Image (cartoon, rainbow over the protein chains, first blue to last red):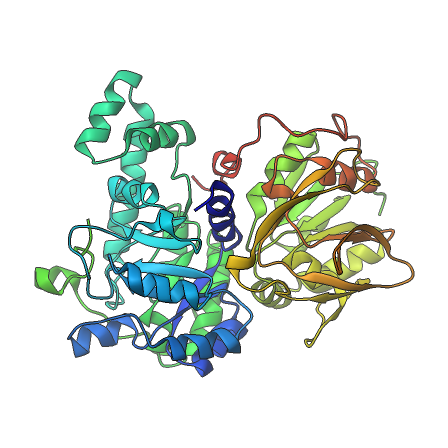
Length: 293
Length: 220
């Protein structure tokens, strides 16, 4: 990937800041999402909550479905490839969607290597639980980062953990004297040059969204107040009782994330949120965030 | 509205999209700049930038909180407006195949006219009214301006489309000057707003980097 192409891809993510990216499984949902003010849709066959319930191997969605969704909306369309499955990514690039999510929500195809994203023209977003993981993905060519959270649970606790961890590690790095940076980079598995960059900037060098467990306008605003640039909502919208209304409310909550008066207004009378799962009682094998490294 | 005396400078609509990038450029030009989230925030501004982002999302948020009406009224009283990319779509009087939104400048735009993100691109071009030197241009899932009315001046025409145009109160660009080191369009808009601006039209800001927006982040 040429340097200017990478920059254009990181800059598309900049244009998504302050927005909500919604998981959709068909054309009708994609249109509801766009109408509600989503900045992009994630086209997939099953939302994470259903992947979790149904089990089995979760793969890239049928390109025919993704193509139908792409044709039905004007906002950017994203789709997921399995971790390390560079051929799924090649297919999604050939489909000319706007962004690929190399996602732990799907069953990993490679437990050792993530996709070498520098070999693609299309942008990638990747999940991360901490600063080291985020910077390793950026070193591989990711143009955007999101917290992993714990997808399909409707429980924001893991997204909060991942964002707080990243913020804490960035603060630590920023405070280090120059001679301690290489050791910090070694311990945290961070490419040295990117460690220097983060120390200088005081934040990640690309846009960082929250993802994994966001189910209410308050969850979305919580992640924004913790410093995220925007949010992904997976199962949280179309697994609730009134998706269109909840989608509009979450869009408003992200725009007015620091205004409790507006948050109060948008949080009222939304109907039932998706049923949630307690992450603390889940077996470690059921947790998706541990996939990838 | 008296656009110059007592002016608070230029606002950047802060609902979604490339807000920090514009604020950072305005700061480099030496103009007072602030994010605008509510209708009441418009008071005292000489100009307002509607940034790039997703136009459907921006239109929903403008609509819900009555900012659309407030912007139309302020424009009627002399507020200058600049729409980049999605902002240009929102300001256009005609939107090919769709309903226009603010409809304040007599141009027609065609959304996503270049295709998907894989069709986003950079190029350079000379816009003599704006700067003496060629300006670097960044097009991201950009629209095309396909028609300009009689009262609209074309500032930059490329291939089969118009990339920048203006009337007396509104500037529209389908590309993103805030994503390049060039301050030329920000200076041009600040002058259009009647503000004093620092620096020369020519040249690029040597201190700007693609990561300048991260240093100017609002909530970290």
